Each structure stands twice: as C-alpha cells, then as structure tokens.
Image (cartoon, chains in turn purple, cyan):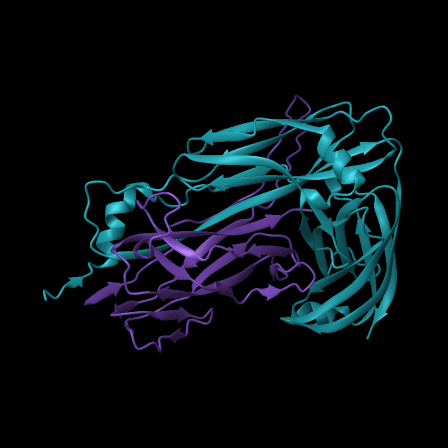
Length: 183
Length: 272
C-alpha cells in the first residue's frame, strides 16, 4: 500500500505579538501634555515549516534542518517538492535584549479529531526533534535570540517527522512555545 | 488485493476548509506597561489588549525568573523558589486570571500586594505571564479529510516583572571593564554594571563623546535585579558607531526620562 502524502504548510497562521504602546495625554488650558510611547515588540512568522511531499510506503523519517535542507533517506519514504524551515522575525524590541525560544518536549503530532490521549499509531506522527538556529544558552538550556542594535532578530525552526506507515489522512498538530521576557 | 492510492489533496484545499478556524494572528497581544512597581499601599494595573483578528483567550499566571550575570532571565520552577520568591508569590494578588477578548478589546488586570507586617525590608519580585491559549482543536466532523496537514502551533507569551518594594531601599551602581570586541554580528561594546544595595535598578545606557549632546548609541530597558551583584552588557554596534567610539567616550547608566532620568552611574574611558 502506498500513500502519497502531501505535507504542507504548517504553523497555523499567526503573527505579531506586540507589547506596549501606551499613550497618556493630559491637556489643559496651559497645554501641558505628556505622552509616553513604548516601542511595540512584534513577533512574526515569515515562513512555514514545510516538509514538501512524501510518498510513504512504510516506516521512515523526513527532516528539514533550520537551514532548510531536506533529509529523506529512508527506504519507505520518497520525498519531492520544495521544503522550508519555519522562520520568525522579531522587530521593535530592545537592542541587545535576549529573547527566549522554548521548543516543545512533545514527541508526537496528534491527529485532530482523534480520541483524547490516543496512542494509536495511525493517529500519531512522530515528531522527534525540533531544531533551531537560535543559540543554546548552556546555563539555562533555553534557546536564545539576541536582538541586534535596531532591536530586531530572527530565528528558524526545522524538525523531523517519523512515519510508521499507518497514519490516516487528517490534520496533525503539535505546539511549541515562544516567549519574551521583559526585565 | 485492492491497492489504495490515496492521492492527497493539496494542502491549499485542506487549509481552505479550516480557514475559518485558523484565522490569522490568533492570540496576538499587547501589554502595557511592561513593568509594575508596587509599594504595598497602592495597587497597579496592566492593560491587556487583543490585537489579533479573532477572539482569543489569555491565561495570566505568576512565574519566577532569575537574572544571570549576562542579564538573561531564566525560568525558576516553584519547587525551587527561595524564601524571597515564595514570599513574593504569596503576597501578590491579581484578577482576573483568564480573559477572553474579542479583537481590539482591552481589559485591565488589577494587581495588588500585601506585604505582611513581619516581612523583612527588601524588594520582592514575581513575573506575570500572559499566554494566548490556542483555540480549541477544530473537529472536522462530517468531513473526509483527504490529506495530511502538519500544523505546528506556536504558543507565544510575554512576561513582565512585578516588583514589591517594602521599606526603604537604595542601590548604587558603577561601570567597569569597558572593552570593544568582535561579536556575533559585528563589533560589540561590552562592560560590567556593578550593583550594590537592596534595590534593583532600571534605565538606559547612553554612549557619547564627552561634551557632545548627540549620543552614539542608546540602549533602553537595562535592568539589574537584586539577585545579581553585577551583570555584563554587550551592545552591538554598527561600523559607523564603532568608528565613532575611537578616543574618549562616556558611558552613562540613567533612569529612563519618564522615571526621572536620574544618573545611576557613569564612566569616561578610552576605547582602543
């Protein structure tokens, strides 16, 4: 049995996290006014993690590196099509600020609509390792992006899918955390 | 045997069928202000606004962070909290803890702190986290999905520090070890900010040539928390800024203008 899987776009569209734009204005006859404007910080997804198409006839893995390189060497999987690593842009932050990127510890993508807590192989796609080009902080174990002098930065995320060949069609989902700590 | 050759529809079709459920920018948030200082008498509030284009639910929690010598914050699990952190968690009250907001709708979160009478003087701190909760998984009933779509949902959030200042607190800061070095993306000016006393400090670092009003570089939002006696700061510089640094320069650490602009520390030095 052969299934042609067309693996496509990822990361449910999302974008922009912004923090801080406040404006206080006081206005009276003497025209005294104060306005405090804080730079909004935005986090934007600029590319989806796309594994291209895979012809799955058995167990195997498909991996996309943060640099966008495809690894598809398993006998049971034949790959084609364009692949992409997910990319995120951070803008408007504080220069030289470090932003933590937390990657998930989940090991499976779960088919939406499957019973809660399912362990059926047909409902799970192994999601071995999310990888990123964000720098590892050896002290905290977190991945970090250091914003440049303009308060901007970016990072990419790749990953590995592991098929056992029994997956049924559907939407397979997993989550990962991206958080920004203000100090 | 019947050979199944399931031709999986293009993702566009699958995605399109989910479009109403995966609206763009779900959970985007705006928070102001990005730090709260309480003195134990007056409360404070944070405005949370949904700047996405669909309804979103946010969870608001108190977490712990510690600063390291590079100014980076790392998460501390509650089990590992020290005495001060446990006291901070116990004294900070806030409501609500969960907010569902339609697009462009702001709501305030009220925060207060009640330091007990026995509490030693000091600065206590927790970090309030705002996390967008991903929308419930759409169950595609009555549909026969033809393809496999992989969806990685980012959960993104922001934490802001909440300080409780109890008693008379003060801090002194000095600047040491300025150096120009090659960083990951060009030159960096690095130096240490050394803090003494019972209070944290927060402000901006201004680099300028002595006597010149126009600064070469300004970095806002530089904090030194009470758990660190000193932290390193590395300012990435453009080639023009690097060239402008040659000769004597003045490094200033000041409170932000909106907080009074008081000079916290300054150093005049010569960068090679």
